Amino acid sequence: MAEISITNKDWERIKIKVQRKYNHLTDEQLQYAEGQEESLITKLMDLVNRDRKYVVFTLKKALVNIDNNRL
Image (cartoon, rainbow, N blue to C red; front, side, top):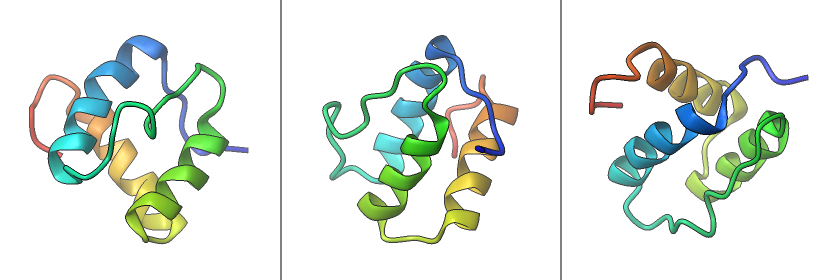
């Protein structure tokens, strides 16, 4: 089970932050449906070549600072 919960509305804002940090990622690669956090984490691990702990930390950081443009 995923350690985080992301709504579709929040994902739209988080996705922009992720694309700024990893500018090689496309909208198609970052498709997400609410409730699919586990597959999102796994996909991001592969796309950015980082471990699970880093990806979860990054997503949590983006959620906490949702109104901030930084990741």
